[in-house]
Image (tube, rainbow, N blue to C red; front, side):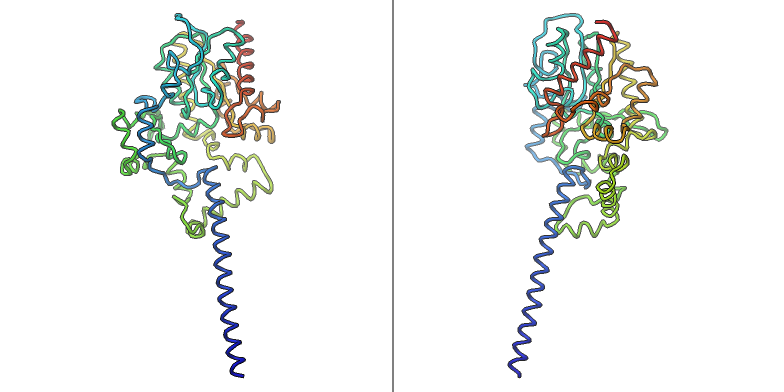
Length: 393
C-alpha cells in the first residue's frame, strides 16, 4: 500500500511538473508570437514612441552625403544634375525653362531610373524642360524652402504634395516620426497665439551633425516634438520589451483601445476605421495645427511664384491607401486641403480623382508604394493635358 502511495505521489509530481513545463512552453510560444506581432505593428504604424539614437555610421553618412544646413538634407551629390536637380538630361543655358518641380520622393521618383521619372516623360513627350528638384524624405515645408533658394527661372513651378507629407510638417527630427530616421530639418510651427513661426534647423553645420549621437540633445528636442508627445498622450509604451506580455499589461488601456479600433476595422470597415489606422490622416481635421501649417506653406509657395512671374501649380499625390479609401467610401481624408485650394482658386490637380477610376494598383510599387514607371507615365500625361488645356501650350 505504501509502495502504491509512493508511486501515486511520484505520478502526481510528474503531472505537476509536466503541467508547469507545458504552461511555460505555451506561454513562451504565445509571448514570442505577441512580440513578433507587435514588431510588425510597430513597423507599419510606429505605435511605440521610443526613438533610436543613430550610430556613428549613420551620423557620418548623413554628414558626408546629404546634410544641408537650411533644408536639413538634399539629394546625394552623385545624383544631382547641373542645377542641383535630379540628374537625367543636360540642359542648354537659357534665361527661362518650362517647368520645375519640388516635393518628396514621389517627385524625385524613387525606385525608377532617371529616364523613368514623370519629369523625364514630360520632357520626352513634349520637348518642354521639366527640372526635377524632388528630394527623398522631404516634407512640403522643405520643398518650399528649396524652391525659395533655387533661382532657376521657369514658366511653371510645381509643388507636389504627397498627402502623407502633412505628418512630416509636424516633426523636426525624422527619428521622432519614423523609427530609424536620421535627418534633422527646420519646420514651421504655431505659437500660443496660433501665429506661424519658423524654427531653424538646430544642426547648423556638418560638425554639429554629431549631436545626433547625444541622447541629451535628442531629449531636449523631444519636449516640443509633436509625434513624440502624440503617442505619449495616448498612453502608449515607449518601447517593446520582452516579455511582450509585460509591455501589454503595463499599458493595458492603450492596447485595449488599439485592439478595439482594429477589431472594428476588421469586422466592419468604415471610413473612420480606415483613417484611424494611418496616423497622419487626423492632421487633415479642419482645426488641426497640421492643416493650418499646410495652408501656410501653400500660400507661401503661391506668393513666391507670383512674385517671380512664374505660374504655380499644386499637385496632390495620394498614397495607395488613400485611393483605397476614396474608392470604397467616396470620401477623401485630405478633403480639407482640396477645399482650401478651391477656395483660393489655385491651379491644382488631385491625382486621387484620376487614379480611382483606373487600375491604380499598377501605378504603385509593391516594395514601398512609390510610383512605378507606369504610374509616372500617367502623372506626366495628366500634367501635360492640364497645362495644354489651361494655358493653350
